[in-house]
Amino acid sequence: MSAGSRLKEERERLKLTQKSMAEAAGTTTRTQISYEGNATPPKSAYLAKVAVFGIDVGYVITGKRFENVACTPTELAYLRQCRALATKGLAQQGLDGLNFLRISSGIEWSDMPAVYQAMQTGEETEPTNEGDKE
Image: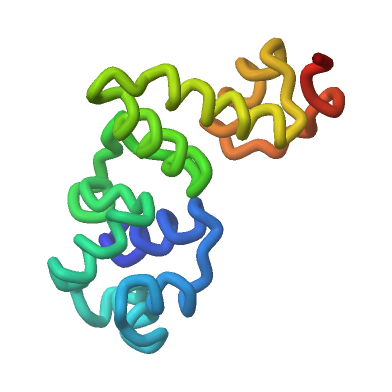
């Protein structure tokens, strides 16, 4: 599989269109198509910009997945929040934020292993109820 094919695979994994990814990276849709079609190799500045959105740039370049990669934009946001708030004694605020997101999405704690597994495999899940009862 080529770098362009892996770039396309990554874009699709994150459910981004060619146009939205091109705009996020500050390039044109035509350039995005060129990268994915292997007509032009992606430039390093482009790869740095798309990495911010969760593209596994190491995988695009080498064909090998790295373990520390978010599977969805939501998971990327969770990871960033956890990493940022885990410093300077703010871990509890990070957990509170994640708990808020869990409750607002209607996900019970008992459903979290299934939700996490679905995120890893790309499956769709539905919460079993309307969230925790207070």
